[in-house]
Image (tube, rainbow, N blue to C red; front, side, top):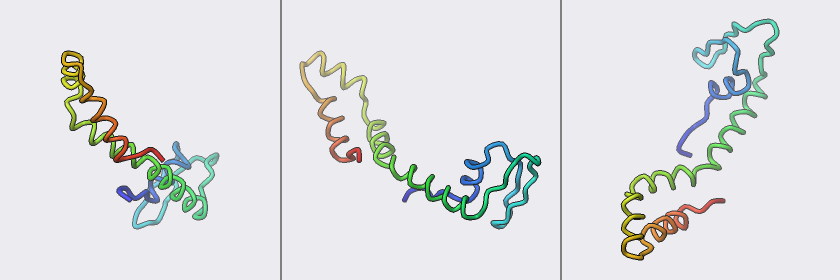
Length: 101
């Protein structure tokens, strides 16, 4: 798990327009009357949901890091000029190393 989803992220996700303060894991709400404060059970469930969504895209983050190391424009140009498949081979190798679930 590269990123830990925390209580703050869960509360922001559940109540994106709420005004609140989180100090030492205690939430002080400054929301309007129309704002329903989430329960601890709802916050815990949202942490779990957000973490699962983040973890499900780990392959994508790993691929992007590898793609960024390639000089893809030059590889494509060289492949066109030389009738090679260096760029396609490099992309395929990254996708094999980090498969989509």
